[in-house]
Length: 215
Image (tube, rainbow, N blue to C red; front, top):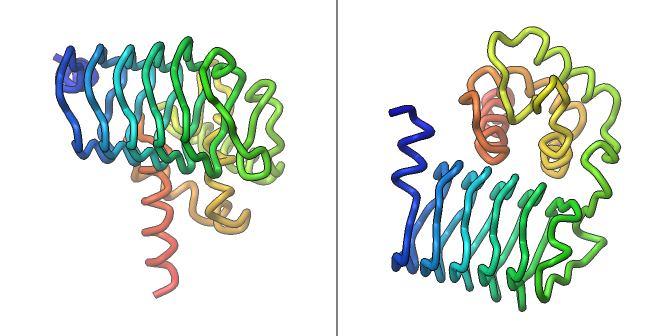
């Protein structure tokens, strides 16, 4: 079984009680979760790409650097949860409830229009009409293109399908690093990161490389 297949099996929950669980940096890609209780859980740095989390209870949970990309959260409750540096792209959110949630430095497209009680502060978050509408410094784009050009395998955290630059990743990194820092350290961070790592994993490697460079 492939690593992705193992992740799908390990992190698929049906009518399960996982209250208070720590899923920090776990890979839920393409897992199936249904009618399960994740209250007070930690999902910091977790990848929920193409994951189905339907009719679950994720209230009072913490999502820092979590990736909701192509995620189906139909009917799931997130009441009073905290989202920091999270990415929501291509999400199916029919009936999902965000009552009492707080969002800071998060990126959204229009996929949450069918969610309930979705209220965000536009000054501290980014809502896109489409991913390509993001304005990224030209030098950063050139840097990413050079990394992709010289990489033997596609790294989805930098490169999307059909060779497109993953602008949401770059936008998230610009929250925490200067343009000069990314130009200096991004190539090395990508080289030591797993092929399908999350933005949070890449951010951790960037911090380590930056710290090592200043010693």
